[in-house]
Amino acid sequence: MKKKLLSIILTTALSVSMLAGCDGGNGGSAGGATGGNAGGGNAGGGNAGGGESGEVQEISFMVWDDLEASEDLITKGYKDSIDRFNADYAGVYHCTPITTNLEEYYNKLNALVAAGETPDVFIVSPGANMNDYVLTGTAAKLDDYLNADGWKATFTSDAVFAGGTYGDEAKNGAGIYAIPLNIAAACVFYNTEMFEKAGASVPKTYDELLTACQKLQDAGYTPITISAGTAWCLSMVAGYLCDRNGLNLQDVKDHTTDWMDPKVIQAGEQIQELSQYFQKTAAGDDNDIATAAFYNGNAAILIQGSWAIGQINGSCEEGFADKVGVFAFPAVSGSSADPNRVIAKSDSLCMSANSAHPEAAVALMKYFVDDTAQKYTAEKGGKIPVTSVQYDETIAPPELAYVMDVFKSANATFGFYNESLYDTEAGSTFDNCFVEIFRGTDPATALQPIQDYYEENVW
Image (cartoon, rainbow, N blue to C red):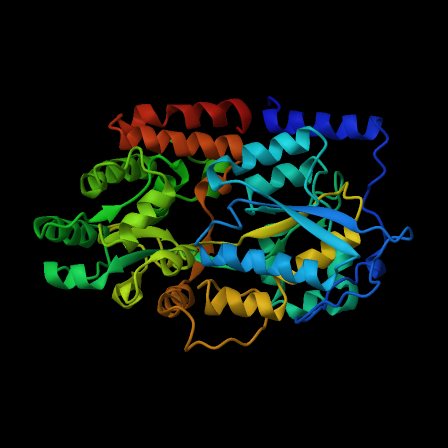
């Protein structure tokens, strides 16, 4: 089994930092990680965690958006958490954000890791992306911090940590390596006004989705806006279709089936069939452009995660939210697969294992999950909180209630395929295969790279 490029880069970077005498380490005991209030509210400044020299401890936080310019409401919530942290800990701790965009985020983060400049706190997606940072020792184990001062008890359940928990005791020690910030579910957002004018009904099956799209198109609307320029957006739909056709990813991993399974081929054919209803610029549009087409009223359907609620409500014209409905991704007729499975994920925070100021880093992370931040997550951002905070449902975005209905009706959840495969390279290969299918390549031919990758690296 050949080694993966990212693992080589990260391992080399860690070796170099150790040879250079980097003395960060995990630093401090759990008892020292008391910056911030375990439950919520202000963490309090004072002398908490201050260095003996009296100098301000500077830490960095890396995020996949522009904290100053973004209209996304979730991003604005992240900025508020940092601002509150900096104000409460003035003269003791200070956080400087490192910002970029989602498409370039992991490349830039990996470059900083390789240069020995890993941010003290960085945002990640659970799954293969996070796995790289855990297995190479880049991310710190967080159990001791969570168990101190009752912090872990403020979360809704241990289940919210599932995506950030790893069990490789031999290499890094089984435990939790990421703090969840929110829960999002991938659903289908639709313009109720366009549906009504076109005489289209909310579809429960894939065939009914095609029928609705045809009616929308006949009425002069663009049925679906999607990004094929940002490959994960397209592969999210591909993942749903694979799942609805009955593919079990564990069977692929165990090699009781493979990527030439008829269920995957059919998902590819369905992507091609569905693509006739995409906007004409789908091949080049990125996620922001595709989402904007929905909230600007240029398309009737957006298949996206509930994180889009913050983007929609932060940018749309007044009254648009009243036209937005949400439904679960449809079933495939004739398939025995459970149609009540939902793609779900959480944005999460990791801490650098080599942070020189781990207490400050943990104090910052607590601000992202305190009562102020989690109320904002629901009431403004439209995502599901991960703590037991009470929030006012009457002022939350109306779409959140619809997403909650879909989420509560789900029998099970599963992750993005590109974050659930063997590693990040497998995930990007899957993404690229479905982009090729979208462009018209025969599915069996287009899927050969992911088949080859598993034969060389997994089976």
